[in-house]
Amino acid sequence: MLGLTLGLMSLGLIDLDILQRSGSPSKKKQAATLMFKAKLKFEVDQFNNKFSPDSKFIFINSTSRSLDSSLGFTVANASCCPSLGTNGLCIPNQTLCQNRTTYLFWDQFHPTKAANQIIAINSYNGSNSALTYPMDIKHLVRS
Image 1 (spheres, rainbow, N blue to C red):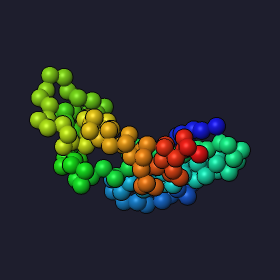
Image 2: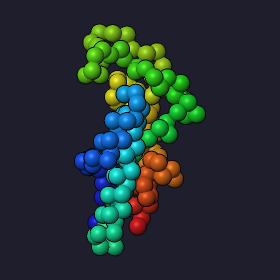
Image 3: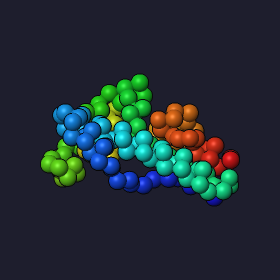
Image 4: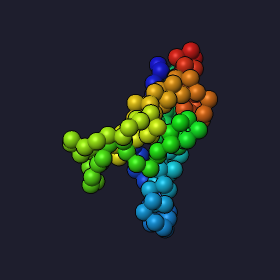
């Protein structure tokens, strides 16, 4: 059995205490993200140890911070389409960015096509353990 493992886990009281003491909202968000990813990797390890040797599970971190200016994304702090409010969706009939390949985000939540292509390539054939853990999709299929 082969599988990609994604899921949600509850935060414990110690984790919640750490979040409350993390400082600014952005620091709290960053702390929560790091704790979630660490727990998810732990769960992948648990699945790989729990099931038969023929079962393999991996974690694909599509939100990895490995997408940066070295890959051509010069705009990572704004979306390609103007958006408003907390829903993060594009405002209808607004002018889009001129060069979509330089923007990391399409709207406030979703990566652009260029970012998704890099995520897909690295998910299939990548050696960055921050993005694919404990192996990429190519090695999962071959195992």
